[in-house]
Length: 209
Image (cartoon, rainbow, N blue to C red; front, side, top):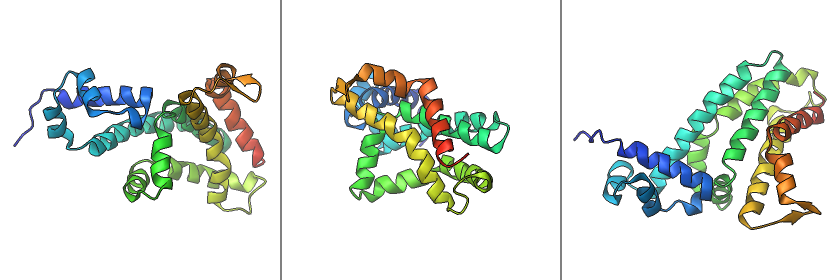
């Protein structure tokens, strides 16, 4: 049977995205999604079946948009190093938007939830393949040219992701000061465009590029 062209699924995904960005996975309540979308719960289950399937649909859509920005950013670079730096910057920007969502996804994978790992590895890793190609291009001129590409990725990608994720965790837990610096000042450093670009530069210099 054809599904009605009501736009309800789009309204639900828009509301779900808002909740994910505001409250993370733990704050994604079906009733709240439906309330914000102005759609009843029956239609939610009709279109998406379960909360988990809905979450996966929203995450895939968000990731697809990230990949559009990622590819545009990479293509704007000239040299392999510039393209690699642009790729890292786009990863940092995506991590910033996902800082309230990613920790729970990481936690699920860390706790051995195979469905979370399967979803992430099948749907959220295209950018890693692109960065691997760029890293291979840059490796001959780096200080780690004898190291594997996975080693290089482990030296680059966490620098772009984890400061933002940890900052988001501190936000959610009400941390106000860290190491004598206010969280507001840290947010300006870590979450800003300038801060993201600077970390990308630091990461590249760290492997001698």
